[in-house]
Structures are given as structure tokens and as C-alpha cells.
Image 1 (cartoon, rainbow, N blue to C red):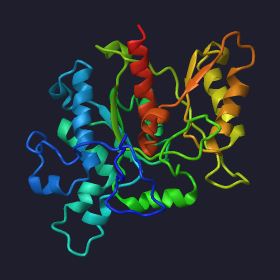
Image 2 (image 1 turned 90 degrees about the horizontal axis):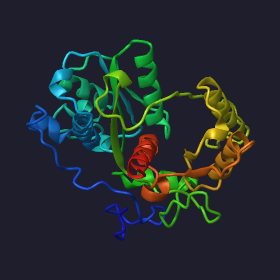
Image 3 (image 1 turned 60 degrees about the horizontal axis):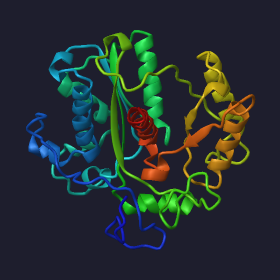
Image 4 (image 1 turned 120 degrees about the vertical axis):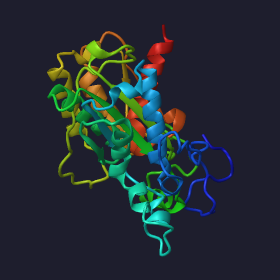
Length: 320
């Protein structure tokens, strides 16, 4: 977490002084990935890091990336904003025409498919803070239905433009002191954070190294809410959880730990805890532990789902 006076080059009373930042986002081995230096110069840093993280995820799975060329591997990326658009797309004096390719969200997936030679579905998903988990949902179902044999699932988020953060603050979602006080009575909003994550999703029979298994996925939409579009629905959260555990034939009372969304907002946390209590607590003989990675690294918005998965995988790995 960045603790310097300001993560941005401007000072404004409506922009919190703290944010979770990634170091060295300007570095990229363009030659290794076969990208011309002019194109690399106008690429969104998220696109560059997604290429790097995809390579690392495949290597970490014990697979040689070259052997995946020509395979039916899909790429599903969760992403919302490209803060570099204002520089490379909406500029009155563009250096070249490559900014359109460098900042397009679809290209964040398509570049991965291009360089690795994947022939499966390749696209970006934007569903706000659930984007990377919706990408996982699409990847899981694509493998189950035979659309692809394996998949790269990614999420990316960089906080580069200060006035985007200002918009969030004016909406009332951000903590003035830049801290996510998750499930805390003093919770007053969240801290925006940067993150880039990828996972290599395979059929278990093909995997050489397994960190976790996807048992089931389920999504829904709140639909109309009298409170407004930015408010969560306890009813729909409860329905989603009940349907998910019923479909995968797992009793909610058997769950030992729940990694929650939990951002530290006065609107979201009480609703989520209430839904969790109604679904998981009846009939329990042991306490249900819940947590949220945002208390450690802030809210990485479209990539927050994969950050939560990474936390659980690492916790499980180091618990033995």
C-alpha cells in the first residue's frame, strides 16, 4: 500500500491521499513479446502486464507456453477502465494510430491470444467490480460446454488518472483516510487499489499442478431496486448463494471459511453479512470465518475477484 503523501501528481481535497499502487508499470520486455517499440509505447500498461502474467501463470502450471500454440485455449479478461485513453486516444496530437489498439479492452485479451497462438474464445468482460469473476464464470462454462479445452482468466486495474478517483469519492464510496475497514463499525468507504492477475484454468485430468479446484460458478443480477443502482440487494445475494450451493450439492453449513466481497462501505457490508448469516449460519455447529482481501490490499475493483481467489489459494497453501 502506498503511504507517500499522494499517489497522484495533483492535490485535491476530493482525492484521498492513499492508494494501492503497483511498482515499475513502465517496464516491459517488448522484444521478448514481439511488440514494436512504437506499439509498446502506446500500449496500456495493463495490456503489457497481462501478457507477462499470462506467461508466468502458464510456466507456474508446469506447462511450456510454446506447446499451447494452436490449441483451443480461451482468454477471458475482466476490465473496466483504461486511464491511458486520455493520452493515446483522446489527444489532439497522437504520436501514431496505435493508441486505439493499445487501449482497447478487447485487445487486452486478443493480444494474449495472438502472441501465444490460442484459438479459443478471446474477449473482455466488464461487469464493474465483479468483472474478473464473470470472466471466470465464462471460462468455466466454455470449458464445460466444449468451447475451449483450457482458459486464461485475467483481471486488471490501474489507478492512473486522479479525476477518476475523484468521481468515486464524490459518489461517496471512498474512505477519506484511504483505508478499507472491512466489516468494521468504523467502515467509511474503501481505498482504490491497482492489481493485475491471471490464472490458468484447466481440466483437472490435464493439470500438472493444482492450487484449487472450481466446483461450481453462479451469477445473477439484482434487477430493479428502489434504493438505486449502486445499492446491493440482500434478497438477490441470498438467492444466489442458496441456488449455488443447492446446484453443487454442498451444504452451506459445511463451509469453514467464506472469502467475502467486503469493501468497508456502510451500504455494502451490512447487506452482505446479513445475506451470509441467513444462508450459512442456520444449523451450524461451528463458527463461520469470513474475510476480505481488501483489508490487506484495498479494492482493485474489476480485478478484486481474482485477488480474493489468489488470497485463498495462498492461505490454503501455507496452512499445511
